[in-house]
Length: 152
Image (cartoon, rainbow, N blue to C red; front, side):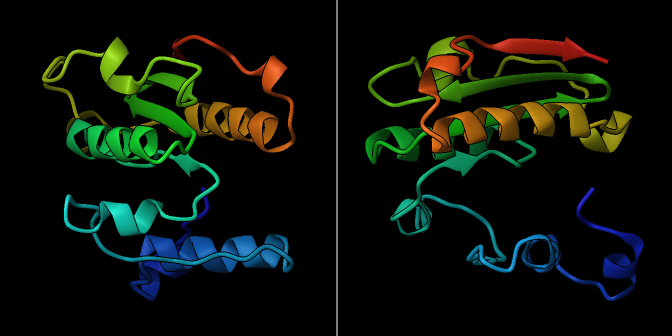
């Protein structure tokens, strides 16, 4: 929703487009756009000094990498995954909740991907952002403490 047709015409990386849009919404927010892939080689650097991580990835390998780094460095992790009209969200807080690896089986899932069946992501993203806002505004008692599955 934050990446539009003009961004496509300009071949703008999604991270840069998101930074630009978020800064238009609130000029007081500091946004750093990083284009590239998260990997074992750079994940520690990417997680350092983060208050929270929102998962916008499209594969479990990267999600597990984020999960592991977040739990290593005690950074809350907002997980969201969606394929077609089905999705799951969970908000993980190191030391207070289980982690993504604790509730999912590595290699599980079916063969459907965003590339093969598309994706309707706004509902999942909305839940992720809502949970992140609860955490960042010190309303942890209102956090959902379970995995939520949705099929719109």
